[in-house]
Amino acid sequence: MKNCWEIKKCSAAQYLNCKAYLEGKRCWEVSNPRGSRSLLLCLQMGCPVYDIYMDDIDREIEYRLRLMFPFLASVEEVEGESS
Image (cartoon, rainbow, N blue to C red):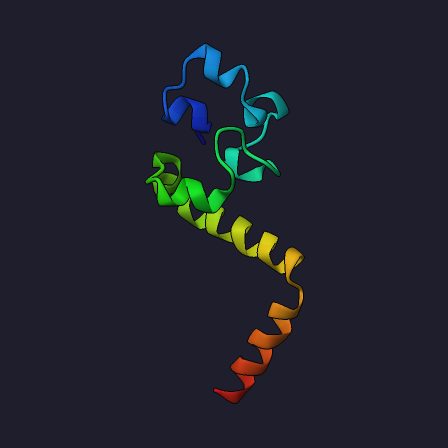
């Protein structure tokens, strides 16, 4: 699995200041990615990393949304039961 700085071909000046690189994580795993206000902003910009790892990133976004808005899970469960 390639890292985002390899996919985007970032220069050393960019990735040496990148939170994902410094923490040894993938870009979608850090809490506040440098250079992007949120994962959603990155996705709107047509990120090549998203094109490759879309399923992993979508799962991370869903997980974060459920942490921020736990009531959404119960709403989805109720809607599922009524279908």
